[in-house]
Length: 91
Image 1 (cartoon, helix red, strand yellow):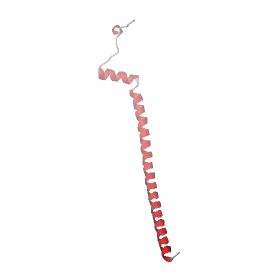
Image 2 (image 1 turned 180 degrees about the vertical axis):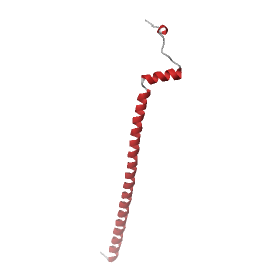
Image 3 (image 1 turned 135 degrees about the vertical axis):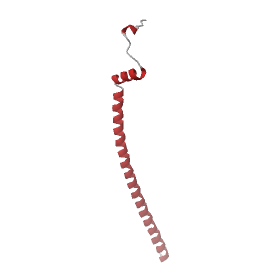
Image 4 (image 1 turned 90 degrees about the vertical axis):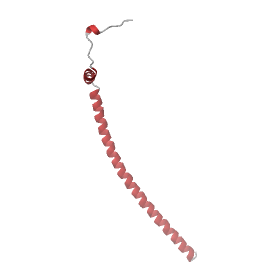
């Protein structure tokens, strides 16, 4: 090989090494950024799980018979029918 071709090859190899090093730096940066985002998303997931549990508890409380009956009585002015108001339909 001539000296000119050796210089060309050396330059090409150095460019390849530098490009490879920059790619490693970029990949490391992306990995750190994604790991930080993962931590934030896991924290948000935990918060949502707690909120979901609270909502399930609230739903169970609101769906209880006493709660529904109280809401019907207060909001809609409903009452249980008297025995003489009950009509039985037979076929």
